Image (cartoon, rainbow, N blue to C red; front, side, top):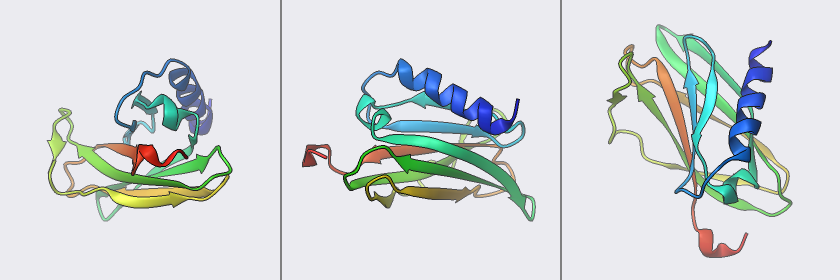
Length: 137
């Protein structure tokens, strides 16, 4: 099975059983290439889909890229950040990465890339949340 097939299957399976939470968390193991959704908002699950996850190294530092696709024709204002974990699963620099704004226009696709803060980062977690859920998107 290709990585894309595994990722899409995991995303579809987990989105089917989502519960309402603050946002979506996509975890990418940069050593094995496995990706999974840890938690998700049912609101976001119906509006945003993870299309592809890629990873690589830049001078010994891990990099993860997640491609997101809008499933609606309306504009979505989101925030995202990449959180990195070490080999033991401990978050590296938990206060160092602020959320960045993402605007997804109707049926648009965007990528979000994050670099580990140092060589200890082995697993990435993309956290996505809505900027304002009261907009009636």
